[in-house]
Figure 1 (tube, one colour):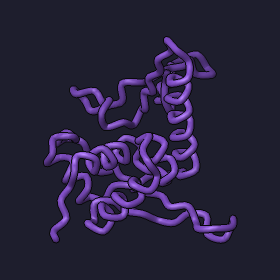
Figure 2: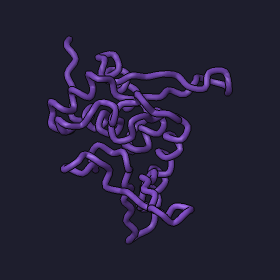
Figure 3: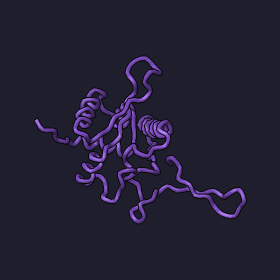
Figure 4: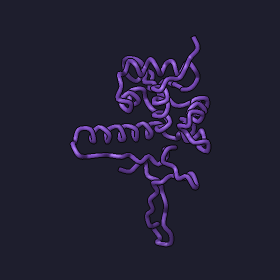
Amino acid sequence: MAFRLKRGDFRIMTAIAEHRMLTVRQLVCVLAQNAQSVHRRLRDIQDAGLVLAQQRGHGRRRGRPEKLVSLSPAGTEALRSADVLGPGVPDESVTGKGIHCINHQLLVNWVQIQLAEVGSFVPGLETQFLAAESPFLLSQKDRRALVVDSAPSGNGAKEVRFVPDGGC
C-alpha cells in the first residue's frame, strides 16, 4: 500500500519545521498527543523520507539513546506543496542543517514547551512564544525575523542589533 500523508502528518511536520530540530519527547509535548501514536506516524513519515532522525547521547545513560528529528528537503517540499510553508522560505530555516549548537536549540525548545504549559495551568494567562527563526513569523518584505532588539555598544558610537532566542 502506498504511503499517503494525513492531516496529522502535516501537523507533525509543521511542528518540526517551527523548531527546526526536536527530540521525540519534545515533539510529543508540543503536539500534546499520545506518545505511541506520534512514534508510529513519525516512523512512517521517516520511512517516506520526509523526516530525518539521528540518535543523540549514545552510551551516556541507560536505555535507548534519544532521537532527534528534523525535516528533510523532501519534507520541506511537501510542506510547500501543501501551502503550509511559503515558497520563499529557504530549506535552511526549517531543517536541522546549519544549527551550530544543538544543545542550545533543544533548551530553547524546552523553554517554549514550558511557557505553553504555564498558559494551560493559569486561568486567564495566555503566552505566545515568538521564535526569532520561525519560518512562520518572518517579515514578508525582507524575510527577516520580526523580533529584533538593540543595545548601545560599549563605546557609545553605535547600537548593536541582535535577535533574541524568543520573546513572550
